[in-house]
Figure 1: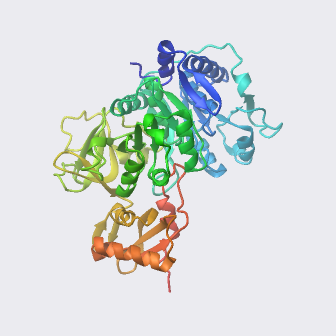
Figure 2: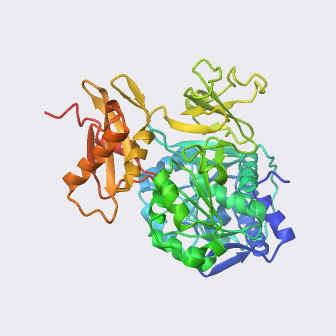
Length: 531
């Protein structure tokens, strides 16, 4: 099997040229057509003077041109940098500058939105417009090419790409500082897709709905997994969860991926009675899925297998819990996926015994190459293997994740928290997930987030923010008091929220996760500055 990303399209086109690769609205593209378009775009990019390893940024919603630009970039010998379409100009400028992109693929409207920041992006030379012509003079410092012209040439490709060549840079936000670019090779991406396809049992007959951003490793992996198996992908830029239910039914989707905040909403909706005829696989990643949500999904979609997954962009994917283990281990993140090796270690690098919290270490071919142009961060997270991996190649760096987990006697992992998310109060270390689980168990909460902020006597105080369920009829004071009473019943005193508040809508990151870091900043001085 080839380990070059764009060759996945070639492989599928050779065996099933008429099979549908992409659907976007009323547009359908077969694998044979996809191959032709891909070559045309790749030769067009190459003709622009694309140097080997040059970065091409793509700032578009999910549409065929987006997918073609990503895969054509690697075929032309470049490195693609997908930018979340929800990002604002300042965020786009940071990514363009940090990766030193030479080409930006975007639309007329988005180019106009970026007009003030693009002239300052010194490495940018070309602007490719997918839906017409940019306004004359809007980018005098750039060569502007429209999508049709890009594909009109009869150029050739002369690249020297190997499986270890860099294919993509995905930008991920940490707890502090600006987003960092995670460097992924062709081998990282292709073997990651092969691994996921293996444990999900993805087949060529499957139809995957792409609702997650392609700049998110989870969303990108879903796309690559489909192409690895010759399956079909339906692209969707949704507005409401109800839209997802409708398109799942209309397109007879077989596999649906989501993050917790999305599943919390989908688990409350009514699904068509015939959904069981086609929707057989559900996957969750990007955070803990509360037990109450799992039960709701199982009640509404009893014929669908639910896979709980865990991963980091830096390791692409790490572990999964088989659906048959959900009943006995609903809070577990499972065991290592194919091609991954995981160990739990103490600060000195020795292995933790079952039940002892430690840092999760990732090894194997799915571990990224590091952070783009950031040797300090790379050296901190990508380090030699710990003592708990005595047989690992010492020349091959492993990922020190910064995540705290435990492992049970059967080898199943349980997420405790990020080092920077753990709450230290009254001398205790507390995982936010434990408190959130109790809030969700009340069945009065649609969403909840828990975090710590500085407190003059406790060290950190526990803040809990919740959004009520739609059928909540009582006043806010009574509602919050009931939640606190539930917490008192289920938790020791030191784990009780110091402050609990009702929010109509919790802020989200561009990938759909609750933005705990933003809330931490908003509440940072809540106790230290109050009179």
